[in-house]
Image (cartoon, rainbow, N blue to C red):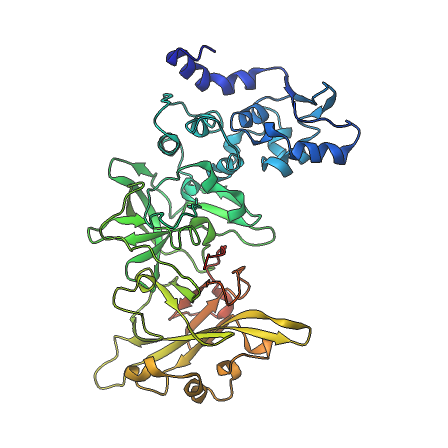
Length: 509
């Protein structure tokens, strides 16, 4: 191709997929691979270190042709794409079923947008814009080539093109992985690069395209100069401003039922929403999964698209630091209950953790954190005492006979109204908590008996479940965050409520 001609370059880039797809056979010369073809283990090791499998443009060269033959640096035949498909899947993430299939039985469109994006998540290109342009064929879209616009702008333009051709909302199941502490808490609707779709977010699960003909997701997404408009079910959090929006796609863990991923939204005063990244990438859409309860009715949601900008109503940057927090979700809504007190109380009225719905626990011993949230039924009449209940959360190290270093454990309890006034709740101590349920050893620090640490509890029709096995990075020198589901008026039992689980990331001190 003539790279000095912008028109010819644009035509060639938009046509490359068809060139490779129409080839009878493609020959792949790997200049940095030198191995004995009969040494299967050696071939895999060399392929794993091969530069060709890390470049953006070579993704379509791997997928598009029906037949491809690989050669090493000395032009020795290593194998074919079909014969090496399982090794190539382990290295690149591209399913072997796609690499083995013919043109009719398996195509990239058989896979969700997020999964296809993940194939390019760890690839690189010399020019930043090419990370978008090298994916045109993978998504069967065409767009003008504008070198100089920058990688993020080109990639967002690609996603807008994809949105016009599909209602697969896995396009929104990405995570901001930037580690710079100055990164904004509020971003645009779309990701800045394929790296935001890294497959590690789903912990070995598959993310599947949703059924646009379903009863909940009937309308297609639409994007304008204002932002993204879509119908999405919303789940409440502890904060009145933060909600979880279900996406029209599903995450499938082997041996487990499918669930919808979510993204975190901030409700503005004008009726629209902003997409927020809690803890700068620690908690995001593909890390949050739906409870076993039915999804609530969908609502028309308008998410403003302002990439790289700060909205005046958005929450500010903050650090979890060394503290421990719980993010609460209310799959069936808060009913008539409202939070009336907490221990510990927010640091101040403008506490950013409280603003985004995170309840910080109090550290009362080296290996013990706990906290209580008090709720009151607002429908109680003046003649009757208010109906109150408390949610107790704790994190402690359990020291077993064979574990001298201890193991961090989480627990939750639904308690009747605490035996102190709400005004005194901020001053309650661990010893006073023991008076509420003296037979329960939860209020001793640290706890010695694992049986006391349960991730679910029920009192009447109120159920609370915490992700007891969450892969949170534990340790007194690091912050930790977990998530719990609360249902106040649940007709079923404990087993019907699953926690909103998420993938946690280590936080810098």
